[in-house]
Length: 267
Image (tube, rainbow, N blue to C red; front, side):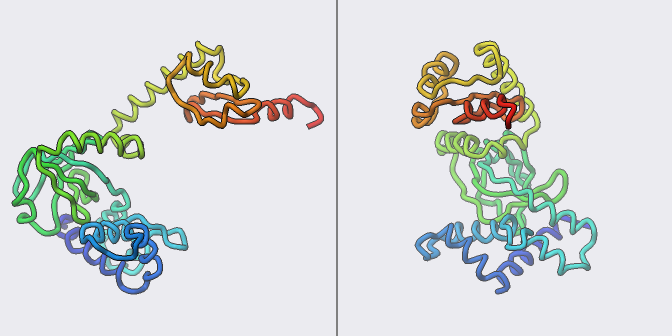
């Protein structure tokens, strides 16, 4: 079975299912987020809204549109069903075009630093205007282990937009670290960095848990890190700083009352 050919057929069918009129209310809620003024002014953004609804939006029952679509398509082969289920794993990225190879693009994602072989359901002609060094901001869905398909309408930029897009990729990574950690190497590196920071915290404070008055937080943490904390912590009677091995550094107010509760045998 040619899964790339089937993906090019099934993706439009999924979008038709999304706009079939059975999900008008839910689709309207999605469009209201993308177009708060209630006026659809941009075709690419409209396509993005529909793509998000078809692949990621949770319906009132908690399932996705993909699940409803597959439930009504029992004739699909197992490989086709597995491929469509895989579309839940959408990759949003800022991609540099490395190679234009006929019907495929070799793309390097500036966010997760992975390389993707991408195709279009519009065929080979879809990439005629692209050259190596250009950039594409958009979404990919998996087809096979090695092949991906462009989902929705991407935005295309010339090479002179590199600095702007690199900055945008860094900001996207900070907003949503999960996009970065698709890359196993970057995830492993992040765990190593957090483990080293936890060791430094424990060495500095003598424990991975320290309780102090709120007014002390800025000064005592300032000697350890440049991390900023909300101003309201200075007004708290007690604040606990805990550097958990898995969850990282967190702060908890009124921790003194919690300690007293556990220390009092009457509780």
